[in-house]
Amino acid sequence: MFKIKAVITPSFKESIALIVAIVLLISVSIIKFDSVPHIPIVLSILLLIGYGLIKKVSYRKLEGGLVKGSQAGMSAVFLFFFIGILISSWMMSGTIPSLIYAGFNLITPTFFFAIVFVITGIVGISIGSSLTTVATVGVAFIGMASVLDLSMAITAGAIVSGAFFGDKMSPLSDTTNLASSIVGVDLFEHIRNMGWTTVPAFILSVVFFGLLSPSVTLSDLDGIAVFQEGLLGTGMIHWYTVIPLVLLFILTINKVPALLTLAASSIAAVVISFFHQSFGGKEVLAILYEGYVSTTRVADVDALLSRGGMESMLPTVGLVLLALSMGGLLFTLGIVQCLLGKIESYLKKVSSVIAASALTAIGINVLIGEQYLSILLTGQAFKSQYDKVGLAGKNLSRVMEDAGTVVNPLVPWSVCGLFITKVLGVATLDYLPFAIFCLLSPILTILYGFTGKTLTYLKGNPAKQ
Image 1: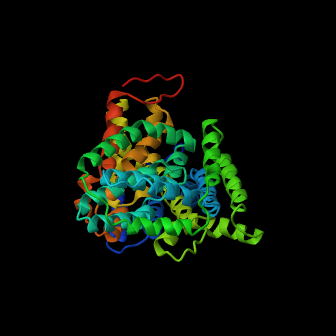
Image 2 (image 1 turned 60 degrees about the horizontal axis):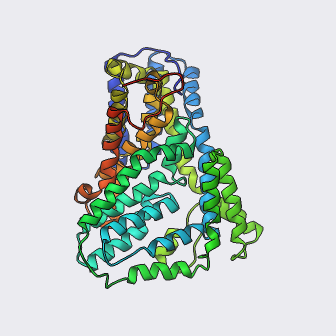
Image 3 (image 1 turned 120 degrees about the vertical axis):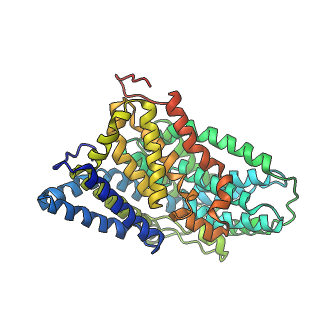
């Protein structure tokens, strides 16, 4: 996509008008009418096609822009399918249930908020979904905080921080896979590079929540006990279920391509599932496609474990292809080039490029309220700018997560913000000051841009700030 040439040169006013129209169309559809982003993006594509036809651009060239744009996401599409398979295989093998069970054993009477942050982080990494984490274990922790008469806002902040830490760093997360794929960076190289900003943010968050934690006695552990009993009731909590995870780490350390690593770990998980399950071949294939369905009869546990499958990835795949196709049109019509041209004189330093891309991701979250678009559009717009200042692509993918993925829950009218407020019963603006991990991530990524620390430059181009 980043090599798509413009077929026309629009005026700055026309470019701004089109961008404003698209932002309004998408944001109003999502925020006011509670629409999934797919439909407003389709309408935006039609708007751009109409503009192109008015400008005498042939439909064939416009269609070519759509196709070229979508081609940039094909590697992400294949990864998403394998992620769906991995999640369902890790569910049926007991890998994810065992990790969650181990996390609940960390509960102690002291440092409540810090423990909530750590456990939601473990669950988030285990299942690769921030919103599922919030809607399951997050709800349990909110209930415990209510019984113990603790701050709901701080508890919600700890839950959101942990859930989005886990989402950001999990190889099962669709946003993590999307950010790495959109700029052509290996998934696990992307995760390793995010550690430079994520680890300090994690440590500071643990200290922050530890200092805020009151000295309390957890007299009511019913919520945790229900989860643990439900997990034990699956019959899948065994030491050997971590083998697929260990294999994943080993292959990652040895820099095996992400797709092959996910495939190998999935196969190992399917094999292990036969140690304590009695699935037939037909059932295994159905689970890998449709996802695992938990039948513990404990509603929260079943909601947590019923996940995965190739089919679950189809909405995300559709959104990625539509958004990239729209991006292809924006490049084909010269709109992105026109807007970047106006600020290009300010984007000659590493620090300014990183700051501009981070602010763009934040701005898209605020204006449109959509997490995926903040990642996709930022990656599309700034890849060439990173190349010009000699920065490797993994710097951009890290910024897209630091300022895109984790910022969405801080916006009251965003998809994540609305969901979390509804599920936890805590207003976004109430928990925002305490979602410290989400606040620190964009600050650290911009700070590193100005200091030049932890940045990776393209070979043969030792650019300096």
